[in-house]
Amino acid sequence: MIPRKGPTVRILTLGCAKNTVDTEVMTGLLAEEGCRVVAGGRADVAIVNTCGFIRDAKEESIGEILAWGQAKERGRIRRLVVAGCMATRYRDHLPKLLPEVDLFIGPGDLPALPGLIRKMFEGEAPRTHIVEAALGDKAYRSRVSVEGIASAFLKILEGCDNRCSYCAIPMIRGPLRSRSKESILAEARLLVRRGAREVNLIGQDITSYGADRGEKRALAPLVREICAIRGIRWVRLLYLYPGRIDDSLIDLLATEKKICRYLDIPVQHIDAGVLARMGRRYTPDDVGELVSRLRERLPGIFLRTSLIVGFPGETAKAFDRLLRFVHETRWDYLGAFPYSLEEGTPAHSMRPQVPEAVKRERVRRVQDVQADILAARNAAMIGEKVEVLVEKTLARGCAVGRHRGQAPEVDGTVRLTGYAGPAGSFCRARVTGTREWDLFAKPVDSGTTPVILT
Image (tube, rainbow, N blue to C red):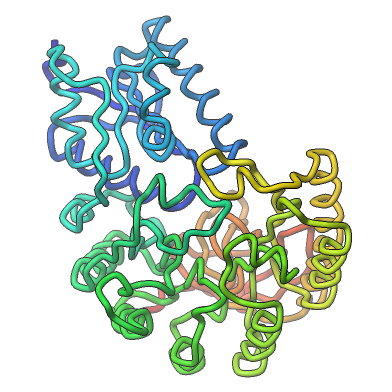
């Protein structure tokens, strides 16, 4: 039977920021239909919003599903739902392997979730409900975020058409589908009303925005309109394909003060042969010229990239080129990941595969080089004044925030002492020290209370 006051629901979110957005949409849709989303304790329904991108993420998802299955056996929850990418990718296998799960849904099925939960308690729900569709614009109107949150992700598209040989995203999330400009702007205004001062634009590749509708260079005009929304202080662009960063985007960063001079550009590798096998449509020279152009046109820009180490056919010489590239290019932030063998992708059958031990050792070497670069970068900032978005206040005048060159969740924080203002504010601070990824700083005007700038 359906609980009389409406089912209580707990949601666990795994994976990337796109899953975080999906969970917030899910939360709003459930609340509109009388469900009560709770942070802890017993619940009628538990939902695990999974990631199915690489092996480590899949193992984490399976571990959490099994843990919630045990909670169901102990009576702490009554029904278990598995949502997200892994449910979609393995729709034909998971129902057989995980009998403790009552319902599997994909990212495009969230609008149907409240009705499915009701039918689940009535014994009428299908065990698998996965449709090949993107989350529609209408669903984003229901999105619920934490009141007063200073930073928010804004997903502007779904899916991807790049078809890189190692990537399962097109199988999971489908082809590129851009959201309408009107829907994106409406959601941005909604986020501001709920306290967001920083908006981070995300998607599998945001430089492809509008391409599915035949629109060229559609990202820059969209970003200009987002910047025009009163209340937004920072706009950040995340996940840009290197071969599509053109002069219109660079001009935008050069002229629009609200846009953080920060770009996340996953180049993946620098060896020409490896890039060709990956299906990446640019050359090593293209990458070098792009980085030089960005640093010349946009002084002080912070650049992040990600690298796949140990891709099939990566020779010792190819890896040496990659390591030299890390040394010479001196990215502000860099993530290095061992290649994950993913079934259903072209790279799965490529030979020769690099042994796991070799991949791990190569990743360690890249990370060691980057750690030295980041330490030097942070040390050079001591004495500089930075604008800080304060995200959390602590006891005794301490607070945690980020400066414009730090994206949420991945680039470290600024840890403030002597701060007298509220969370969600901006303050000017002087960097006084560093520790690993984080900076320490003190407000420049420690005797005043910072205010929110709009």
